[in-house]
Image (tube, rainbow, N blue to C red; front, top):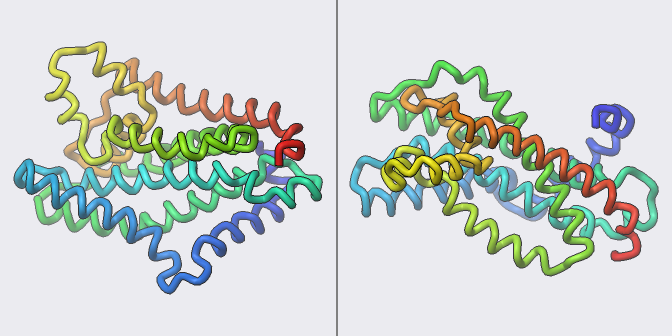
Length: 264
């Protein structure tokens, strides 16, 4: 992968820049939509949760969770059409096909990193209002982000390879993402899960095997002093699963790419 970055860095840069330009072409607000959409989502969830559960809603945690979730959703959706949407390029130009989903995921990484410029002040204000403090492990955020990127890239590679051959995948992915959203601690936290599952340790461990549950909690633990990361066999397994998804997606894509031109 590093050799790919070095050898095709110009092509990768141009494709990543093109992804960002196409996404905001003709839009009055441009990049701001990548910030406003997750922010509006977070505000909507906070509003309705406060109506149902009162004032004990972890607003800062919800904001962090929604932005992290949006990074994964955008990576999956852009990876899904990265090969199919570049059919002419794939059939006529010789280059490593993996660059297409890689460029799409990198574009989403750029979006997410820029959105942090809005997310961080919002979280800081929410902490100041409630008397909270920034966590001591904030310097680990780049490590969490790197693992999150690798996980998202693995998903994008799988989606790109599968969608070329099975076009119905794009419809199933939407349903799958909706279900995944509710079983991930995006608009709630692990305390809520603990209260819901009680002493059912097996179910709690299975829940924490969800890579997004681990990643969202890791973001929160790094940013917020009130949140601690649960170092358990399940969370370590979720970290390993992130790397396994990346490795598995890479191998699947390499095996499938030789047939792309035939199916496009």
